[in-house]
Length: 365
Image (cartoon, rainbow, N blue to C red; front, side, top):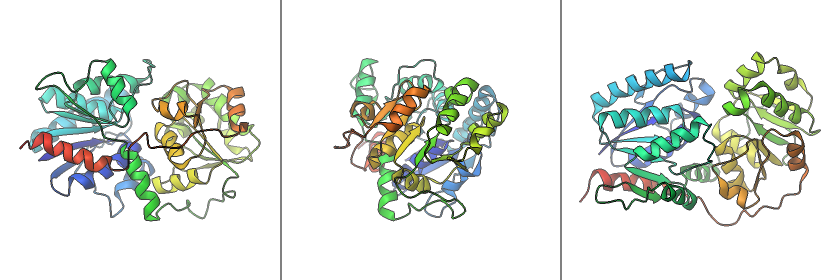
């Protein structure tokens, strides 16, 4: 079996590394880095480590408009697929790299498998939502991270029982939970470099902001930064390259000079887990960070009006505040009351299950 796996963003590298190791125990995998994230701390830092496989191809897409990036990805992926002739294409999540992989596989008649299928926030103005829907409806195998995701697909008529040649839908669990458990058990969750000085555990908030809906609108970004600065307690703020760019463009860098805000460079996955584990609360617009907060039993405050990870909200572990100053402050000051029991995102064996199901699909009998 030969699998072509497409990744291009920080969360996708984390997921791909877990699945890659499981697949490569018995099969051939071609790992393709689109170059959507080209900053070292957002991409190369993951596969520069000895225990993670390096990409077999790097498309070097780099910066540019969405159209330009997609065009370069499509042409690059087509060339790789022509050369390697994979049995199946594997994509992750909901980024431009996901869309490029799905479109290229569909155009070339190669079966598509989607990790994190079935996620919906029902905000159709978000590019990620469009990508999720298109990718799911193009996939032969849909690996859902939860029962909620399976039900979302059923609503759209994707049930896995549409006939002999219909799609395969399975609740495989969340690959990110695999990565999280491995990180904790390996002892690799260490603090960021000593040049950063952090408050004691439980005495700071951790904040991340990167989504276009928050960073590309000056009004929203300024409200978020102003709210962080006005909280009156320490905020550790690893700043995404996209956010740095917008802060400079909008002349909002003054907020980063507030004494309670510790703006730092992006950190590794292991360092981020350490920061999350020791935070009093987490303020974020990242789907991955929402889940990591849930795994760690740390209250989460999400800077969006909706989320794909509805289980975290339903259990009271996560609260949606958008960019409302009052709601942000109230959420920070509120006493935790969430239910962190159970395992809605699987048992930590999603990667091996995905590898086995890919084998069964590509090598029947």
